[in-house]
Picture 1 (cartoon, rainbow, N blue to C red):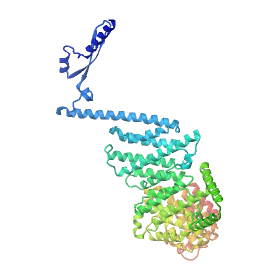
Picture 2: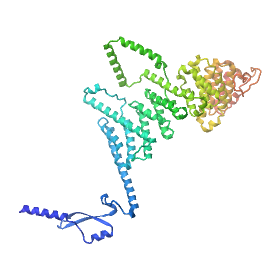
Picture 3: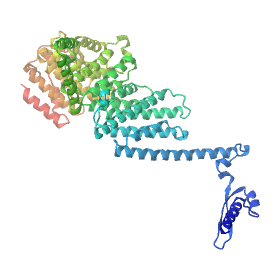
Picture 4: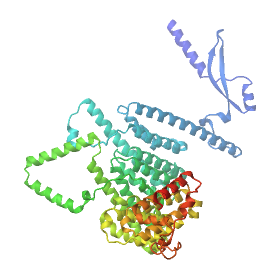
Length: 616
């Protein structure tokens, strides 16, 4: 009986719970206030009385299920404003969740890369998540930037070599197997990430049919992908797929659309050229630059694109290493030697080569011969770019005027590395440019510097008369101090012109003093004294006076410029541009007395010392 009572009591409670609860007078108050109530489970107070519970909910704050599908037209504006606020709030929540997830996964990977490499895949899969369209673009930007920084941190300091099928069948120890698995998964995820970045960059100009992202969002995402690629390009030059990154970045460095992105890519290339120690990454990048310059043509190349080549750090080349004739002869000898070898010797030779390659990769040291060969091939590609522009048709050279100064400056910098086979052709083109009269002062000085750099070294064998270069240089000396256009626009270029002119005088008159006549030497000394009075700042007058001292030492007959009585019959004409016809034997360097009263103490002291040392 007792058991039966319990069952009856439980049945009564169930029936009571299922009955609807209403409070008298409460329903009318709800209708007047446009409020609905939700009934909760009743509670039993200590006195034994059962009390009902209700919660009042306004209609605007109801759940989505309670909102009618077709709201009345009068409340249309209110509903749209509510949806916008809900979307903004939902977007903030989704972005916050994505940030927390990225932070947790990234911190776990950085803490133990080998154990938590699987989390890289989870991060990469967030790039394909389309559950929240309102925050999709921001989330992808955060994931792309985080993955780029993450790969820079966890990438090892060596290139990962893919295992062959035979090596995969070999049983490995537990530690070695975990390391190889980590390397393979890292390389796979890095490859997929680079492919995704390349896809984003391709959509930057041609947005696809993506309903989630707008054209502006895809363009912004593509710019971030370019910046991430540039960071990977600079900081992972030793790792796999670096050549693939350079092929993507180099064309963007010559892009006309966005100057900010173009500058970012050019700065990355310059940084790599200045920091690369092995030379392989530099050669791959220069080869890509040469291909882009060939495809675009001289008219469509930008100066900052070619200006990156000036940051190359190449001091030694050996053209015999890349000579085709020698390579063919060596190949023939190698084939003949292999024919004479037995099978055992061939197997031993293959094993020895494989061991040597593995030792080189493990040592990760600079191979001097390989580095010299890479630098030689790099210089060949650089001069191939420059010669294509210089050999352009003279009628179309006006369209390449923006690129020509950079080309001439590059030739002047790397002139000591030019192959002797190209000396004659190059000097002919330089003479054509100088005699055209269309170049600026700085461009003419670079042409003269390159020509005499060639003639001073191995080019002494060439039978070329540099008289035209001497005449152009003699004319330019009068224009350097009074170059008002350059002085107003760019003071650095004006100072650069003065420093290049001093270097040209050193090569033309001091290093080639045996090929210069005494009349021409006196004409140059007289003109150098004249322009020294107007050079600013003070370092250039001091440098010019040092050059004048060297010229007096090179030929004792030039000291006659200090003596009035030793002058020959005739008159000196300073306006002539030919140093052989100015009548310098009839001149006196009276400018030295003005320099002795110069407002800079060092200049006046140097001029006084020259008079004491060489005056008769």
